[in-house]
Length: 164
Image 1 (cartoon, rainbow, N blue to C red):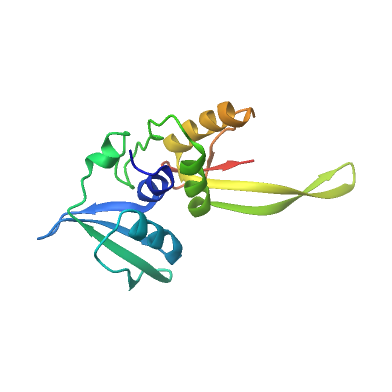
Image 2 (image 1 turned 120 degrees about the vertical axis):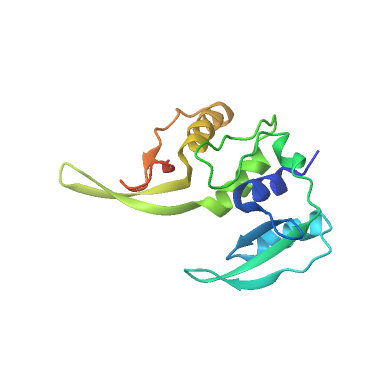
């Protein structure tokens, strides 16, 4: 079985690329996640720097990657309309990897009866279908009520945010 932290990384940012020599591409602005995959899966290729529309990214090409390592858990490509939460029994390390890449912790100002207070807020981003399933898993794992997935923008039907 694949390490669940690594599964979270592959699931979150991996894309199969059909080329003359097909490969599985990982890319992220934080090199740490690619270093983890490189070490745990003992990848022979090197991490390199590439450009994106927004900023520099680190990239890792994994040749001869067996996609069944992901599809056995229900994986679909990153930009699919329907992306499901993986079919796994242990969740903590997978969720930790996902949160580290796709969440933000900040504060929100709550105003009530002319009083203000700051409250911490966790925002989790992703595919709406995936987030619907994630909130159910979180509900069962940490005994909190499921949250409603919010739209990120009026233009996107696929992307969503969970607020905790």
